[in-house]
Image (cartoon, rainbow, N blue to C red; front, side, top):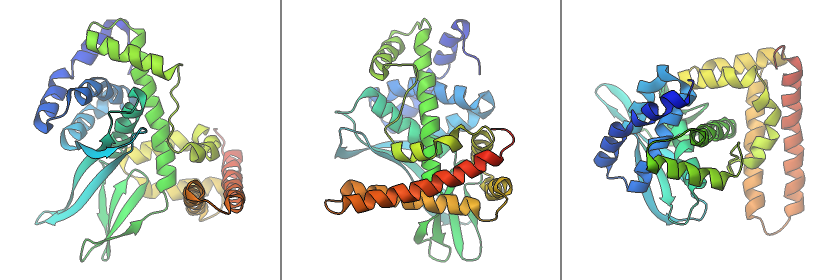
Length: 309
């Protein structure tokens, strides 16, 4: 979607009344409402007018909860409860964020955008099942439940790659919000927020603190012009079952996509252990480097075999 000085003000103003009604229904604080005035239009720019209805519906149905926890760096999560009625399986969705009184403006926007981006990329083909397992999709990954009891039984291995892709898109959406500030904005509240955001970001491109190491390891894959646009399109539409074959066909070896996600999962677990460890940190660091090199080697192989990259 092309934003110009001629259309920026009508475009931003278009969603005010809808956001006001959402915030009134859920009793959001004014700070959250004011951020949504900019976040919702940025999602429309990112995903295009053809996805406007789905995006607005997502913000209507997915409630934001503010937890009692306080953290200088806001943490947040996109959560769902799996239920079943006479019509089949369904989920109740919400985004939970920590108390944000001590957080920066970019950090708060990052957390809201990140979690709603998970939600929007999980709308289509959200639930699938077989005789034993019900799978609830979060982008590329799934949460798995026992079909007989609806008891949670585990997560798929694609979570790290999902977080890397989601964080990259979060950065893009925040850059869109920041770009609104280069125009003359009639609404003084919007203008002031954009001015504050621009002064905190200190540059044209926002860089999230989330999943920094995993983004570094996957950098070449994220920049690949065959992989990222294709996978993000399939992820948005919910056709993730096609992705392993697409990746494996480029590599020319079955199981390569599965192996990539297993390695990324191992790296993520090791990084978490390293941040908490008090002893044997050098040993953990060597393991992280070894597994990371395996990931990078697999990504380089994929990149070298792509015709368009």
